[in-house]
Length: 472
Image (tube, rainbow, N blue to C red; front, side, top):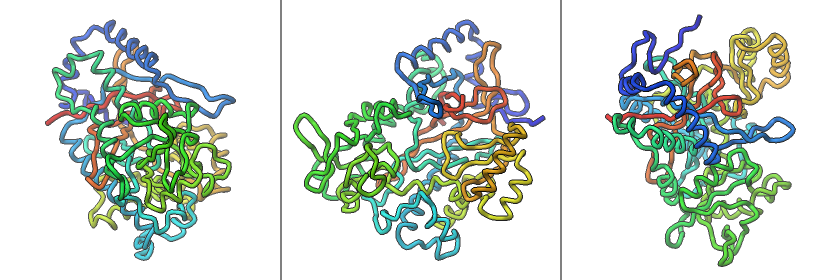
């Protein structure tokens, strides 16, 4: 039987130091009160409208995001190490994107094969020679982390396209503050409430040269039917900026402008929550109704900032991920502080043979996959599922990478019979501007609510927790 490191109880069953104050409080609580609080949290989420859409059926299904009232607690010492590693990694990703769209020194140096870049569907030729305002490609980044023991964290994947979930981080904290104010008076927890203001300031700092007066920022959403629409409207509201759709925008006098009651007004920074392919029907998908015709021409002329920069999605690619230790070292001159999960690239014959021979023990993912879709977890798959996935691998090996099944750490959740361990990951949120890197203390903890499950994605039955980073 696999033994998992539990972040509250360690491997010995003794409460770890970061959880000591919470544990003392919990032991003094009546289970009936906590059950009532769990129901109250669910009702708060329902009233607030904190939902997401699940696709893959005949119609999209709107669901309440499951929330667990037991916080995940991280010590100040642990967070300090994580922050250093996240900062290093995000800076390296930004430098990598600048390089591959300009001199491609990393390819010249033989650290990454050229075809890994040039044949990658996320590589955007439109961005060759283009440098965004301030040299920032990755304005908002989510780094997914998993833990395997007391001191070891791994980066599971990088999200530099349109990382989602930050609204859940903020609402989780707001809910806990409302329901358990006494906990926060007893425990010094670093705040996360400043994120929307920091986001607005970070985006404004990335405005293009020649911007007259305070920059005008807007959030571009695909619309109300998008899975993350709640978050788009939430962030626009909290930042005090306009939420716009493609139909609200047009090119006026060489600038992107939004429709207002006073006519069309120029936009300086557009925080877009739509994929590259839908951004500009004149340059990309001609059938797109979500984007703005001609926006890429304005962007290349340096008259608008698009966050995150088009073409940045190549750094999310799971095959590129396997080169991240080399990428970090190449651009920073330092060894990566945060380790990668060992990864087999299935486009390499020897790696493919190993993966096929050991499929039942591995996790296999699509290189451009997200949300837990299109992946295989070998140890929990049937013989029929393994055989079907083997066929997919043989047909399109370039489309997959494989990783070992890690012994992910657990954090207790509140159940009818008391506390029970469940596997978790962590997505810290990072803001990048010419002023520097800003890492919100904590992030979104996603938890697999099913016993034994390693899949934490909400679309696959996972839930969320409040993440506490303690003060020194």
